Length: 132
Image (cartoon, rainbow, N blue to C red; front, side):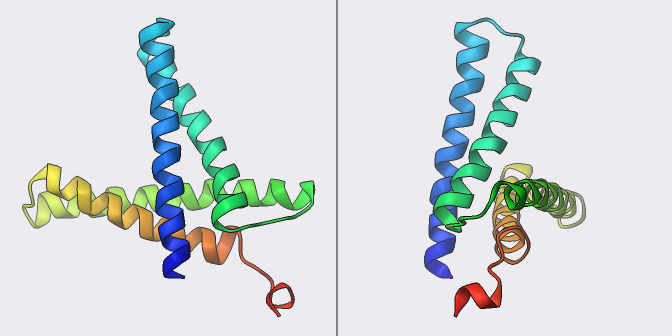
């Protein structure tokens, strides 16, 4: 599981760089409005992240119908992980008094752990019959 988490982090970093590249190309080179560029970059990153994590991190091979369910679950896990990290960020800054730049780093760690766990046990869970 530790190796898989390391792969998850590596894939996530590559995905983040690719999404940022899309945002910068759209906004800086093609002069797309920054809000639209951001939305398109995030959409690209979400789709790429699903594909990379599905194929590399969790090594799923399923039919197209199962893939649609996995995509929905991936979006749910993303939303839950994002909300949990946001709550952690607010608690760290407002209740504990941690400087926001340090709180962001901790919150990103919380997001990564929750996102990995959710995708491992919910989105890309292997059936027991598939493991044996």
